[in-house]
Image (tube, rainbow, N blue to C red; front, side):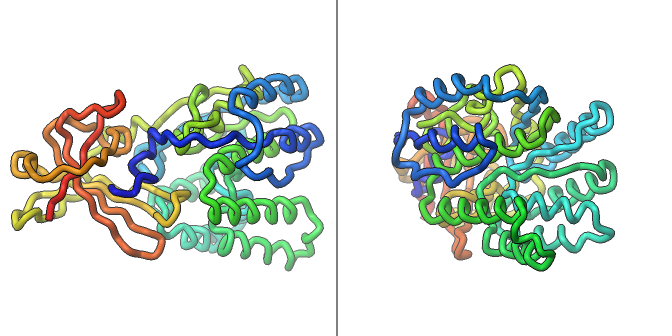
Length: 381
């Protein structure tokens, strides 16, 4: 892929200045969520860790946080997540499920789970078109929770994606029910503002810090309740940096600094690698047709101008393409939804938010770039 915003999903090197945390600290101590300061100003990542550790004594909650990292939209992982939640729900008494959704989307899900139909869920599902959440596995996941774990309470802590659809619709619901002065209304407006800022600036440092701040705010409001959280694995590592800029601790890392031993994290994304193709298509390169094993769709929500990308492995194509012109563009193995071996060829189709499609070709020849096993782009035309 020529767009380095995509090729660097796992190993982005751009260094950004760490955002000002003073406002966040004051907000957390007083129990209020406030708008985050511009991400171009503030402290360094190491200073942030020091500050959060210093204020951890303010936190008096005794509940635990069980974080699970996923590769979005993968059926096997979604099944495992339901299995885990069912265990926590039925055998450990948990009721609060934190998810990588905006505040207003989770609140809408809470209305839906108490309703006698699926109208709300179907509306939310339609709003997810163009993202990896718009798949039958995710839809079935929520419906199964409603049926088997009906006292589940969802908590959305991401910035306000879909602010102009789900967000505005939920605001209208609150207004129609005379709730414009409620905390729900205030938090919905804040989430919408966060979504607008993030999508206008494409500021991933801002998003990572807002996800952390929003998580802490929701968790603190629960008192001593324990919670389970489902997020992309890029946000859940307890010793990882943010996946986009590698300049600040990721959400899970920041939460550990704040809550210490109260947090547990497990990466489930490996489950998605053990998959069979969902179908076999046929793709031609230089007039020759190859069987193309299809391995699904990966959400690119949050990457400016991109909605999702899809992966095919061309069977038996390596010997035919290995001598074609190579580009100075690499994609690390961990970007792929399957294990990679030397001697394989891949087609990656990226769909932009405007509906246009970009198709690129990669081969695996044992390349190691900056210590990372990577595929290399080649020219197929």
